[in-house]
Amino acid sequence: MIPRLSRLVLLCSLAPLTAAFASEDDAPGGPRPEAAPSPTAVLESLLLRDDLDERLVRLLLAEVHMADGMPDRAAETLEELGPHDDAEVQLLLGRAYRASADQQLAQGATWEHVGYFQELASTALQRAADLAPADDTRATCEMLDQALYDYGDAESALALADTILADNPECAEVRLLRGSAHVSSYWSAYDQG
Image (tube, rainbow, N blue to C red; front, side, top):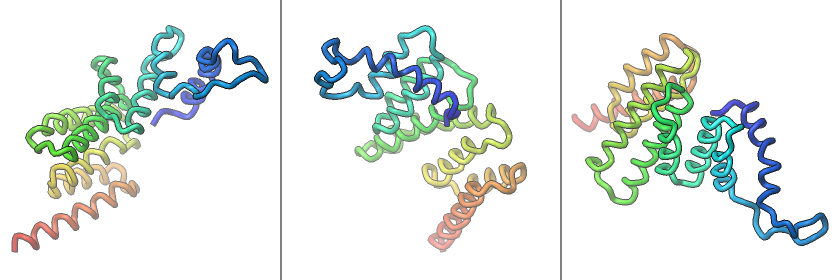
């Protein structure tokens, strides 16, 4: 999601910071700290620095929150950037909103309760798709996935897949999702008699 070079530059800048978390008594050959700082703590402390790209740090922090199963915190982290015309930010924001809805549904919330998060996800994913280069289909694949699996709308998923494939006929993920939409459409027709 974040270019490898950007990750490498940011991670290289972490070395002096992680040393600051160790106690002064931690001299070479001396006692080791009991636990290294968490990635969340390190990244949150990086937000206080003026010499780093806040957008990049927030993207990394949001990815850590997503990996830790905290999509709400990921969304909050990215929302603090304000309205952002950046495909990466919008894509991760859309994924965070979808994951929040999924998490709440798993905890017993109703579709009416999480529909707001799904709408936020749709808006963010559409913005990401609009801002992304033509050969970057990650946001549109996420939109396909949402239409098919969250909304159960195989017809919309098929229409979207056909639109994407017109521009990117070699996109394997879209072809796979299109096939899933056909199967879903077939089973819906079969169930209706």
